[in-house]
Amino acid sequence: MTTTQIIDPATEEVVGTVGLTSLEQTDAAVERARRAFETWRAVDPADRARLLRRFADAVDADLEHLARLEVRNAGHTIGNARWEAGNVRDVLTYYSGAPERLSGQQIPAPGGVNLTFHEPLGVVGVIVPWNFPMPIAAWGFAPALAAGNTVVLKPAELTPLTAIRLGELALEAGLPEGVLTVLPGKGSVVGERFVTHPAVRKVVFTGSTEVGRRIMAGCAEQVKRVTLELGGKNSNIVFADADLERAAATTPAGALDNAGQDCCARSRVLVQRSVLDRFLELLEPAVRDFACGDPWREDTQMGPLVSAAHRDSVASFLDDDDAAVAFRGTAPEGPGWWFPPTVLTPSPDSRVFREEIFGPVLAVVPFEDEADAVRIANDTEYGLSGSIWTRDVGRALRVSRAVEAGNLSVNSHASVRYWTPFGGFKQSGFGRELGPDAPQAFTETKNVFIATD
Image (cartoon, rainbow, N blue to C red; front, side):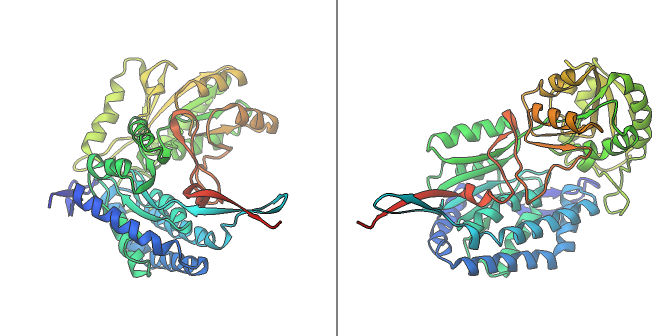
């Protein structure tokens, strides 16, 4: 079997070796999932709900172990990793309520009774990225399982350890064999087979827009359903009437969390020109004090980047002559793929302002008025998230409606709550995850008319 080494991003030490799933093994796993679907879909809704709650309890009991796996595998801070494991538990708990509530409708019709049913699709393929390996996996498999589907899940090659453990916990909790199968492997092998295998009825992909386009095109060959959560280049819009101290103090967390390796990172900071200088004065100490270091320390706010190759990619953006460095924070020296928090003051046409860097780099640009802020914020192919800082409720509503993004926060940087919908506009994605309606995205609506005359 072909294997890959798992490297700790903070130390560059090998923490384990994982076997890579072959094409033949992928086909065999899909076939097991297809067979398991016939029995899983028929499980009484209350029993399916009970099994998902047991899965959530198993995750909760293993939370510290899962968090420590993520620190070693992905370089996440221990505080973030604990939150992420807790999010898996909470998402499973939330969707354990869905099987008994996935009800159809009775629609009035002359001459009989008209009913609708939400029928599960079958086997669902979930492809998970390396930036948030645990929660994004759960966002895919929890509602899919709740709706009666079986799941084959491919974690990212760099970060498979927590997904493998979640697969083990599912079995320990009593989910039948084949209901949730974790298949570590290459995207060109396992992920591609999810797209081409006729028994996989839907693909859920989180990752780059470039790969998402290829997956969408491949799924179109079989008219296969797809949910895509792709890139982002998100704006943090600060108006002159905002609480500037609070806006500046929270800007680092909105952009630098997980070392900026977040499709929701507010890496474009748009500041009304009349307060730009004051905002930068307030932002500088907030960035310099943003603790980048040992991910095992409880007070660390930012760890390393995920790989040497990704660190080089992030660093390449600083070669842009049209992006002056305003100030930087600090990062450890020595082993590990570290990159200090960096604030640039580029032109709106520069590469750093337009392309997704996926690292701890902020680009600050001024705007003149409300219309100018909306114009700049929308001048991108992406539309995932963003923030608006103002004390004017009318402006907050106007700008929220005008900005082309799927998830916006006012006077906050919150993007994801498992009980509300999540997804993007434009090339940031297709479809919605999370929220009360997510299980229906893994079903077909069937209409049945019963004549009574």
